[in-house]
Image (cartoon, rainbow, N blue to C red; front, side, top):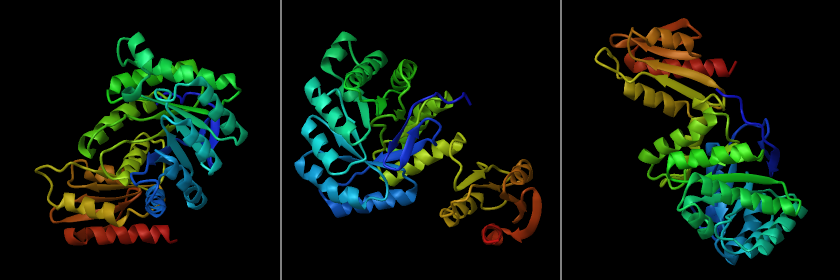
Amino acid sequence: MTNRRKSKCLAIGNIPVGGKSPITVQTMTKTDTRDVQATLSEINRLALAGCDIIRLAVPDNVAAAALKEICDKTPIPVIADIHFDHNLALTAINNGVHALRINPGNIRAKDKILEVAAAAKDKMIPIRVGVNAGSLDPEIKAKHSGVTSAALAESALNEVRLLEKCGFDLIKIAVKAFDIKTMCDAVSIVAKECDYPLHLGVTESGLPEEGIIRSSIGIGNLLLNGIGDTIRVSLTGDSAEEVKTGISILKTLNLRQSGITIVSCPTCGRTQIPLIEIAKEVKRRLSGIKENLVIAVMGCAVNGPGEAEQADFGIAGGKDSGLIFRNGKILRTLPANQLVDGLVEEIFKYLNK
C-alpha cells in the first residue's frame, strides 16, 4: 500500500483525526435530532457497533437547542451538520458540539463564515468544509460548466482560504459526489494542494446492495493510494450497517486491526459440509469479540487446510466432518454438526487463558 499522505492532526473531542492517528469511522444519525432520547439511543447503538464520531443534522433552532443535552450524554464526539443558517452553527458551538460541518455551497456570505470561524477558534472546535456535488456553489458550477472534480476542489479550497484569513486552521475537508471518478479526482486535487485531514465518502451511494460496493470502491481506491484520515459510508439503510461497512473497508485494507476477520471459501461441487450455514453461524457467535483474530472457514481439501493453517483458528471440511486448526496445528476432528461448537470452544479457551 502507498505510504499515507502526511496531514495535520486535529482533535474531535477525544478522538484524533489526521497525522499518524488511526483512520476513524463515522456516520450520521437517522433520527430527528429534536428527539433527544431517540438520538442518544441511536448514538449509543452506533458506538457499540464501532462508530468513532457521530454527525447530527441541525435543521433549526429546536435541533440546535437539543444539542446541549445530547453533547452532555454522548459516548462519542458529536459533529453538528449545518446548512444555510450560520446562527445554528453559533448555537451548536455554545451547546458543546465537538466539531462543525459547514457547506460553502449554501452558506456563502463571507462575514457569516468568518463569524463562525471566530467562535470555533475561541473554543478550539474543528470545522469540516464539506462540499457535495448536489449543493455546489452555482457560480463555481457555471464557471466549470457543471459539476466537475475541479469545481468541487475549487469550492472546498476557496472556503479553506477564507477560514485561514482569520487565522483558523482546525480544518478538515470533504469533497463528495455520487460518481466515483469525480469524487476520487476531486479528493486527489485537494490532497495535493494542502495538508489538512481529509474525510472520504461517496455521497448518496444508494441502497446497501449497491451502496456498499460503490462506497468500497471509491473510499478503498483513495485509501490504497494513501489518501484519507476519516471515512463515512452513506447508505439508504440502517446507520449501523454504514459503520460496519466502514470498519470492514479498513480491515480489508489492513488499516484497522480489531475484532474477527472471517476467511471463507465460496463453496463449489467439492464441498461436502454445509459451509454457508457454518460460516454464518461462526460470524454470529464471534461477533462480540474485540481481539484481532483471523478465522478460516473452508470447505474442502484443495485450499482448505492451507488457508486454515494460515489463520489463527480455522475449520477445514471433509466428508461430513472437518478439522479444527489453531496456528497451523490440528486440534480436533469433529462431525460437521459439531464444528461450530468445537471451534467456538477452542477460541474462547484461548481468549480466557
